[in-house]
Image (cartoon, rainbow, N blue to C red; front, side, top):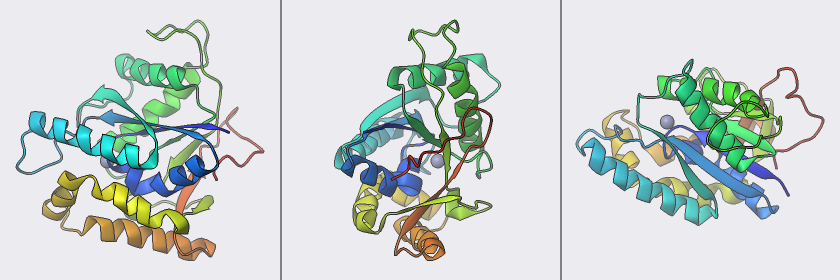
Amino acid sequence: MYTVLVISCHPDDMEIACAGTLLKCKERGDRVVVCHLSSGNLGHEIIPPEELKVMRAKEAQRSGALGGFEVMWGGFDDLEIYDNNKEARDKVVDVIKKVDPDFIITHDPDDYMPDHTATARLVFDACFTATLPNYHTPTEGRARMVPVYYMDTLAGVRFNPTEYVDVSKYIDKKLEMLNCHESQIVWMRDHDHIDFPDMVKTCCRYRGFQCGADYAEGFRQCQVYLKGTTKRYLP
Ligand SMILES: [Zn+2]
């Protein structure tokens, strides 16, 4: 039906914020492509970056396979994502051209850490640039001008959704996918001092209270010229 492209930063961000929605997209027949911009190589207190990178790639592939999603990589490492940078923007332009989505989901520009906020700004810049026929990157051709949805921030801080997706039917599978990221269950315990699956489930319950569902995920549309739509793309 639609092609949805998620451009998120670290492997596990998609599971936290929008896996339930993507599972629902799959069920209605969408093609779901997830691009993790960063390898996630710094997300552990003990495991060294090169080893962690390999581990996290496997975790992401396992999770993606559970959902039936296509998994791509953006080619960045943690804390090496900068916007206002042509090389970085062109990498994202290339991803968008390759997939040519009907709509894009990415981080909120007001999220909690620099990789997330840089990803949001790069996607904003790249999704316009990718529509220009005479702007050249390794992938030729052009993408269409499409709506962009910002997914929830970590723990929902400073984020007011304008659209909700009821994910009650998919909450168990979303958590199963999240649990594929075994290294991050440990990281979030050691670095953030939280029970990671419990936080993610609680946030979905909280968003559910806001829209009359048991569990929900929240989004807001990027509202700028040419990105408005009369259609509801989210499932
Ligand atoms: Zn992240």
